[in-house]
Length: 222
Length: 202
Image 1 (cartoon, rainbow over the protein chains, first blue to last red):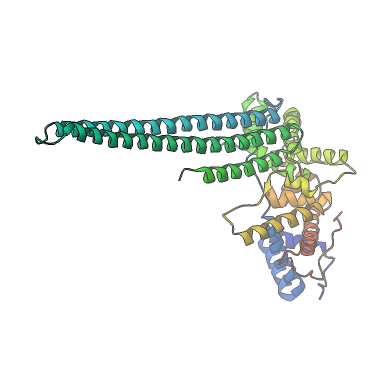
Image 2 (image 1 turned 90 degrees about the horizontal axis):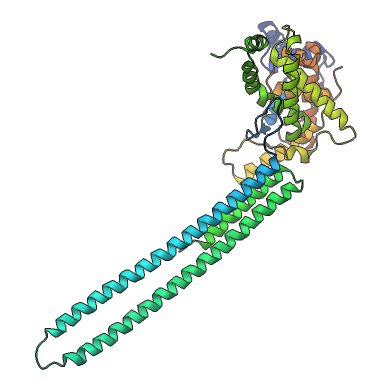
């Protein structure tokens, strides 16, 4: 079915007024009357409203640099991007170093504390044995106790060393993963310098962020 | 309540240079947004916006109060966009790739995978459809649909009759509907017999 006024540009203009809410009462009434009589135009208006809704999906990213009138841009975008990439990389590397150092210090403090407790226990046992009943070979008993306690301390030290080694290995692996991600970020920054578009850089950074998160999750201490 | 554009123009002409900064801050996003959509390039749009404000500043003494300042500003920006499009002649005016690289994104509210795919399809279809419009239709559609100008303001900005604005928009929407339908966008529906196909109103 075709509208009998298909070439009526005045009607087309009035339909636009109605579609965009700029029609006065007279125009609204005229268009409504026509739509009431013309299924083709009624359907057309419905479809045009749908098209307008579809167009609404196209929005602009608000994160844009402000326009500066009458001045050249202060810092070239490629340089700003490179500075940001390097700053982020350096920050992450420093953060990794600080975290590693903190972890080692914590492990060392725990080991010292355990050793102190064991030495106190040994001293207390020695004192008690010295006050023990006659007829008991205190020296031999103490010697046996000493051996067992020394063995315990030795095993404890080994455990601490092993844990420290594992911790160091884990943090080294994380640092290596971090270093690779940083290198990838810097590579992305350099590719920007080679003329790749900023949007690609943003996407690469986003991907690298995902890689970083994944690496952090996999490498996280259990 | 801030001063109106026209009051700021008067202030600027009276020697208050900072008044123009207020106008720039007020309109830069809109001017640049229009330029991005017309040119398909954020970088070029930024240059156009900067150039438009510079040109407006220099031409301010000759600004006729018959039109609104914003319409006049859009007029300058659209003309600058046209110049750039003319210089690019022979190249794709509004490529999908360029559009996808200009920070043109969909509104996101934690969509599911299915919804995300649908939005991606819609975005691509909208890009292709807008790229398929004539330059005249695209200008009118962008100023109306995305910049929210009234028909009168568009007529002033483009220096064309009011009726031409409306018929260009009508035909542009008809064309968009067809292009979206070709891309399989639901609801773009069947083409009513009375709808126009693509031709410019002028």
